[in-house]
Image (cartoon, rainbow, N blue to C red; front, side, top):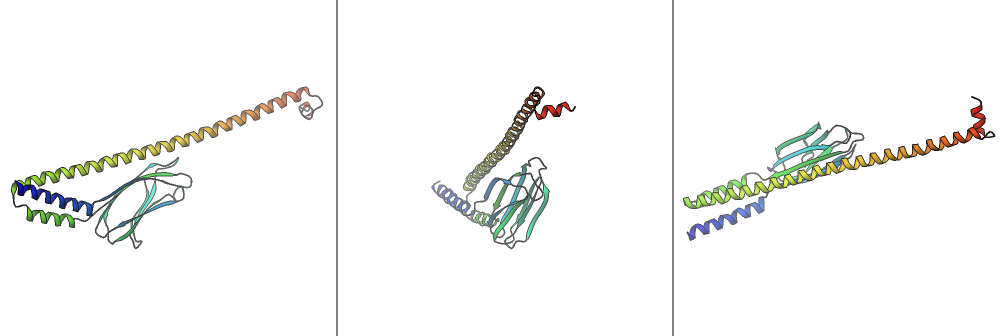
Length: 230
C-alpha cells in the first residue's frame, strides 16, 4: 500500500507539472467596434497549437448585427475571412510560431456601433499528452494503482471542465449586461433630446402667441398694420 501511495503522489506531481507547462489559454472578451473602424488583437501562438475562436455580435445599434472577421498568421497571410456574419465558430491548427492578428471590421457600417463578444481558446498539441500517456503506461504495473489513478485523473478533468464552463457563463452574463446598459444609455439620451426639443418648441409657440395677441390691441404697431391688411 505504501508503494501504491508513493506512485500516486508521483504521478499527481507529474500531472501538475504538465498542466503548469501546458495549460490551455482561454479568454473571453466583449468589445465595442465603432462605425467605420476595426478592432484588432494580437495573440502569440506556437506552431502546431490548436486555435478555436467563437464570436457573436450581441448588439448592432439601429442596424443589422453583422460584422467582418479575419485572422492572419505571423506572416500576415489571411487564414480566415468572413464577411457580414452575425456569429461564427472556427477551429484551425497554427502553421507557424508568432503573433497572430485577430480583427473585427465594422467598416460596413457608417453610423452603427457594434458590440461583439468573442472567446479565444489556444490548446497545446497532443504531444505532451502522448508523452504523459506513455510514461503512465510504463509505470502502471499494478492494477489497483491503475484504477486509483484513473479515478483521480477523471475527477481532476471534470473539475477543470466545470471551472471553464462556469467562467464562460459568467463572461456571457457580463456581455449581456454590457449590451443592456448600452441600450439603456441610448434610450436615455434619445428621451432627453426629444424632451428638450418639445420644451423649446413650447416656449417659441407661447412667445409667438403672446406677440400675436399684443399686436391685435396695439394699433400703432407694425404687426397691427400687417394683420389689418388681411
